[in-house]
Length: 250
Image (cartoon, rainbow, N blue to C red):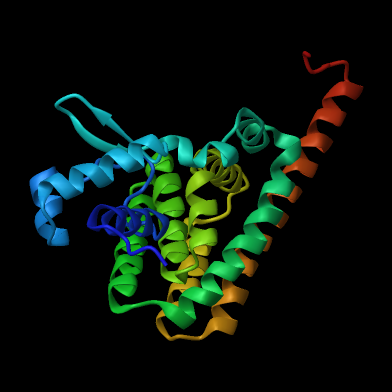
């Protein structure tokens, strides 16, 4: 077997860090001097590894602006079709079914594998969600909601789950924002949603994978059922208006 050169070992190390989510698509890598010190290697060897990653299309370099993990890594999961799925009302249930499967598994694994740092991240994400709810800031709440679920995916230490969540960030962000608006339009209190997220958090912190999975799934089912009832009521209202001659414009 051919012995790896130092540059090849550095390349492999950086690839591992990207796969594990330490460096995310779009992230700027540390400056060469800092990165070489962190890895304990020479700058010429590091540059050789960075050039190799650039040739593979894993990073891109800007003249005088540093090195960035290319966002093209997630292109297969963020094409225009997925963006349409995230925004189209009729695809809402499909998105929620996807979240049911993905987030239930993420919560279960997180309960089994979360490190002390993961737990701190989850607590911080939940605190931000609570603050957004208290201020009735829907945009901030939707971002905090998604960040909380992404923190769970990180704590799952399953790289496929994590990258699936991250790559579909835009779709899920719109979906969550739309769901939150719909739920509040139905007079569902923020306290209901807060308690659901708290139940997920507490199960993960307690290391109870069964309860964590169930709490995550029940949260998605709650959202799905609430939005379904809202949609049915809206259709009834429009039907009643149509009978009085108030037709909805196309």
